[in-house]
Amino acid sequence: MAGALDGQVAVVTGASRGIGRACALELAKHGASVVVNYTSNKGAAESCKQEIEAAGAKAVVVQADVSKAADAKRLIETAEKEFGKVDILVNNAGINRDRTIQRMSVEEWDGVIETDLSSMFYCTNAVVNGMRERNYGRIINMSSIIGQMGNIGQANYAAAKAGMIAFTKSAAKELARFNITVNAVCPGFVETEMVAALSDDIKKNLLAQIPLGRFGTAEEVATTVRFLCTEGSFYTGAQMSLNGGQYM
Image 1 (cartoon, rainbow, N blue to C red):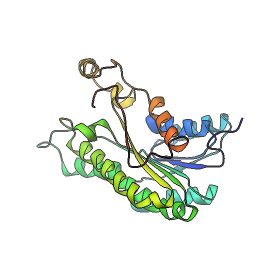
Image 2: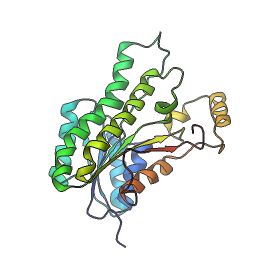
Image 3: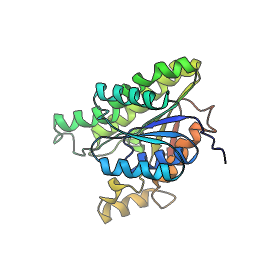
Image 4: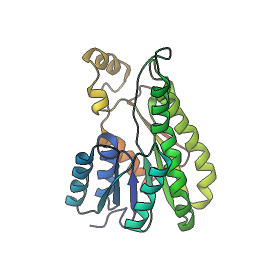
């Protein structure tokens, strides 16, 4: 059966686990060839590649620390060399280093800004010439509910994720005339390793703030990303808020 993304090539940053992995698998399930990017967890990235290939799609694994401009450029160049083009870029790589402002170190600030925010610019900057030449592209930036509402102890993460939303709007305006859409996906609290690490009390408190009464799943986020690449051609500059009603 033909997939909606047959013949398309997707690069997913931070694709070895969590939301990134779910996005890579979802895009592959609909026919895309996928470049699985990781920074340090090679085993998890290779297992993602195997799962993609088992589903009948093509995949390559590329190690690159996208918080560094040269690595981001090499990632996109490798994707273009392997598959000839990049149609879809999912800027998903991210970390958190939670601490109150007065206790936060410069390294904790810089690390989150570079990995979550700067990486998005580096990858987009590297991919956009090819997309313009082909008059087609789908860029999806993985922001967060925290970028929309802020959170105690997450000033660095909130600033980075809010910056992603603002970048998304500007890029969407710049690139629309080349048939390139740019959207932000803003998940609320999702069942990933990050949420699993929270104490039971914190989880209970969070669930009380979510009208739907549950956490989201990585697969639900991935479905939204895939929708923006298949049916969502009239969405650009949008914030897709998957948060169970926690922030409206």
